[in-house]
Image (cartoon, rainbow, N blue to C red; front, side):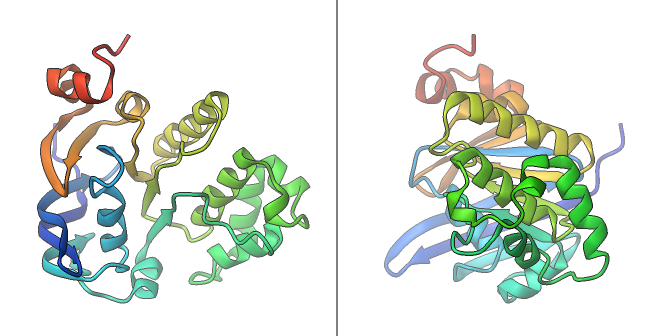
Length: 241
């Protein structure tokens, strides 16, 4: 089988918050059409890595390439316009703006064909069409997560990054959100998923990386990681059943 084209390449990446080293010499790759999971405890460095890719965090050393181009230390708005979106932890919506205004904001860097993209998003998330004039802060938690995903889709991304999409959701809504991620991937979206719920993440991912105190301590196929005794003990309660 031919190797897929690389969408994101991270080489020897280190990030610090003042004197605290948050990421240490991270090497990571996401190929076209993959779901790649980042798993690890809270504070392990998963969110820091996503923010570094988006240009939010200061990078001490290392290189980030997107579609073969060096985007290290590029401004965040330039990176977003190049085709990377982040669906952030805690929904990331603007609660005092309407559903439609949040979607318009998602398309800020790409105004061409706005109507077509809005129609596709509304076709996918019918509840957002029904509530387009409603204040986003009055939506349920699940609806807010759908709006956050929809706003990301409005930018026509080539790479979608999800930061803890299951956080704070009831189990039935977690299942729905992961179903949405799988369907997006089947439609051709490449996805980098940071998630504490290792069972759910490895259940849908192709490959994964295990983070611990700012380091990648394990990597491999999702199946390999799910079967690794260290991963099972730390994240899966000893069993994937």
